[in-house]
Image (cartoon, rainbow, N blue to C red; front, side, top):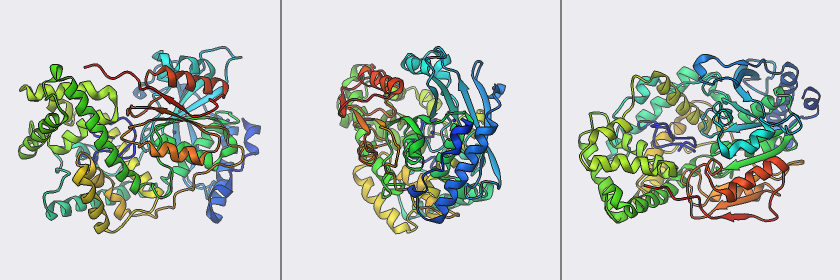
Length: 533
């Protein structure tokens, strides 16, 4: 399941089967030589040296800031530029790729400025280039931080404007209806396996030269080169969803380069979880949050008329699913497209009312609202290219980061068992990740995330019932990063907590970013306001 905002089909680790439809000063950089000890073996040492060479080079070059290209849709005073990084950090003088970055200066005085705050929204595959728009749109939650920091966004390697990769023609990628992710027979499983294998092969055909280097550790090294290019001695970082794993890996590789780090909605950094088990864990959590949403819909039956119990709302869902399976709505919205649309509700509380409203209209006889919401828009070629690219990066990073099971029997057994009690997302998520079983390039061993010399206290923020990044991930990172503090939003489950209005959390994030101070102990906050129907 992916970890960024689901864009019609895109979901923090991976999402409802995108297949099925389908996160710096010249002199300051000479000192760092990345903690080679954080990894293991000569390869890691070579990459650490390569990262130091690339950072020193970037510090000297800086960034040639310009007005952003018109088609980036980033209005002045946001500025854009590029940072050059090695494709392979073991060969720092070899092939180079360009990464797109943007920024807006701090809104406070020169004396108030504390440097740059870099952001990654998740994915893998999410673009961070919209981050400076939090300042231009005068987002009140970020007004205090904006006084102190330049807001800096970037597209990670392979994403968007940063040497993008692709696995399939974007228009083909979004074409609907896809196969129902829930298999009725062995033949259905064989067909899905074939699609997954073809997708993996397509990634290799279209982007094979990039695939071995599409890893989280390489993106973390890129982050350090961007830090250096900005002229920043140390990194201030905000990572959400997959961005938390990027932050965890950065903090492990470059502990002495971290100044402040906020991680929000945490991917479990355990080597045993990256990435196969993490996706199975999601399936359980999604089922729980799906039920939370159904309970809310039932409580608001006077508005939605979908049933006044969870069971009744579920029956309406099953009925809709069966209808779309038999005859896709408008010829294009089948079960796969429905899951893609409905999964945004367990992801984000902000989607509770919009999804319920569309569902309610359908049950009342207005089918078009659901078709408009769930069907692909073939005329939106830019959006479709972005969705395909996001899914390609998601797949490439997760498949390259870790060794995946190659035995179909294991996938079949694990997902069949899980599906029995957690049917909402299990098979859709399985098919989305199955290309990793036949991935055509070498898969790495995940980094052992831990506290290294110089790592400052990190602030961890997590909702208790998050579906995309279950709560245990925050607890695990908290254990691994000594001196970290955990803020738990109790009885809440929206993904991406720092973007929500909850003063108990917002004031602490501000305080940490502005002063570096954390509470003396972990904090539990009451939930943010429940959505209104």
